[in-house]
Image (cartoon, rainbow, N blue to C red):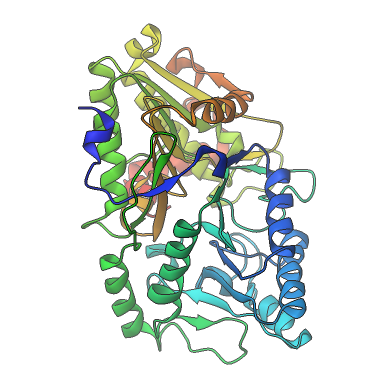
Length: 445
């Protein structure tokens, strides 16, 4: 089935290729974001899992506050996860989190800026705000990155992501309307820059209603005719197991592929439906490229010479899953029908997501394409239909850049097995696998 006919029922915005730009590094992303904030005339909407109290986070929040002081009429809203903002980093000492940082800034300036905490579930482990998109005036800067030193390459290390700049008033309006009407206006959402905040326990019933309303929400898209020199773009939302349009689109995309699939995910832990469609695609002659991070490029990787923490076992658990998948599909690896590319660049980390099908359809998303994203977190994506290949040159350049620091897996034997792991990792994983706790961990992490 041709890709276009598979998605004919989707409402779309029209987009000229000149309105679409791809950035190739975290530094370029930081410069683009800060420049857009500095020159904002109408609105600044920033949505991310977190805005960190570090050098890069302070630079971003300072830029937004400076813009507000210079133009008090600017419509500004920052949205972060409610739970993540009120705790420290995983494995770090207990702290009040980034909320104290937002409150400190609010005291300094005449014109305040609200930083809204979005509580997707009553507990962080069961769902977070994973919505992506920085909207400045009529421009959408879309990336899976959050806002801190490593994502913005403020110091030596960086976390590699994807960075797309889309100039489109209709898309920008749709995304800001959703943020304002479906999130900020709900009574479950509170301004973290205020010093008096309700507890999560006090909000429990309200959060439950909020989750239900999100499961029914969609982006408002007024269908626009697509001219021959344009591509179509549709913002998609996904939360929970049922009626999840984003998940459904991912599955449909994989099922519609006839020639080629590029799939990026930072952690190899795909839902069963994704594995099924990938295998079906290979069997019908589709060339499948899976680009993932090496275990040493995982967010949670801890080098053997550093003190070990339990969270450091996760990258190895993902590698075990990948090795099993590669072993089961060894014949396709040898025939070239399946290509697994491992990304590794010095001590940097990898955070890419997305799907490119037959060079005609692209999903830009923050969705990790794993069980957690599939059922727990609030996710979104931008689905692009490009049947004439108007953006192919730009996406080719992006994937050439992504593949620069990858190594193709020639056989599953290239991947380490549990017997090669450091002693403490080995002990931990054997206990986890023996008690079948790995099944739970893969669903919630």
